[in-house]
Amino acid sequence: CHNRNVWITRASTLSAEMANFSANKGGENAVYVSRGSTANILEAKVSNAFKNGIGVIRSVVNCESVDVSKAGLTGLVVQRGSRIIGEFMNATECGRNGIRVETGSTGSVRGSDVSKAVEAGLYIREACHIDASKLVANQCGTEGIRVDEASIINARNVTCQNNKSQDIKI
Image (cartoon, rainbow, N blue to C red; front, side):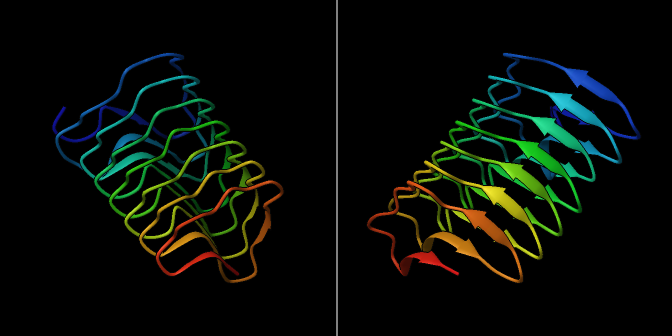
């Protein structure tokens, strides 16, 4: 596809466990979920996205054990009050962040790997609440984990090593 591989919007529902949405050639997000929609893409492949692997806006997504590695920008972008279950994800080697959560979103990225991001591996900002226990964030271009603007993180048993700027910035 030259834009999005999947576009779920306006209170729609998708169930696509173990699907392959990899290597899209253009557009902002390979998988886009918005406007009160729900998606279950457990164990899917969304690697090598042109920009973002998965974009979630005002929606609920289960993307446990999904591969969003090597995205041109960010593997998983969660925004505007969304709820994410993104545990045990492979979000490594992304062009900006492995996982980015912002604007009042909540959920879990427990056990995910966000190593080797060009910027912060996990970036949480603007009043979010995220469980990132057992997350791995090694060898990132800036911080392994960055938390800004009144956000809350559970960072129990994380592994952050050899990041350029610092391992965790709060």
